[in-house]
Image (tube, rainbow, N blue to C red):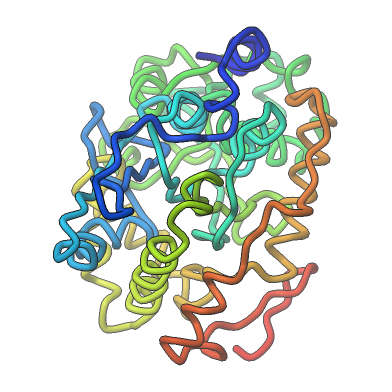
Length: 363
């Protein structure tokens, strides 16, 4: 479902419980849910039900939440959406999710603007490099050569804003008029690059280059104006009903975030992230070996940088007419669970904080 249809569905008749994120799931006796349902905005290659990177993915591979709730008889249900962030919004609106692990900025904001009620608990990742790829046999030499050509991105996802920002860096401020931009999921986008049916796309390059599918037309490293943090949230109704369970989830996630920052675990993560098939081992290694301090990427803090970047993304969704209503951060962030976890795990001063302009302190 595209953004316009999703907004129309919400406006036309989603019930009030759905807009509030109320669960339709049967609840067990004794004040506990029978399961905790956690969504990821992605599904791996060919819909393979596994996450592809980051410390939230490591929570799955390490089985931390299953360990936490085994004695309670609470099942952890992992849900993966080929339709990425927009599909996850739709699932939540229909009462099918309790948490999201890693929502990108655009679908997060679109969902909020259409009435979805959730609480942001922590930042689920930030930073990284951006690559504009073109088919290996294409004649293009620079970004300007693609003007008027077909670019591919999954619209409604964080990748759409990333593409717009990337193009703006090269002087293109009205992307939908200056290019033909089509919407495709990752598998289809890569297939179209292979056949030459699209002329450019943002993607991770090394595995595709090794197979002779694409080449890099332009790349930007650690540009704070291009990338925005992703977010981990809980449904507002679930949080109100089960604050103790929310705290236990956050405690385990922060524990894994810490594990993910340790240099001794770097290689293990690269191996984990190949399992979804979304990226190859060489993709993870090339991308992440540039990160000398893993704390700067596996960073759960709701610091000034997080707030400034989400606020900037809100403004951009209005600029590009991707939302119809303003969204406010007031009452949206709920940092108490993160603060409790940091205190309980004695990690209050472990992560460097990032200022609104991107500078790290306490590193």
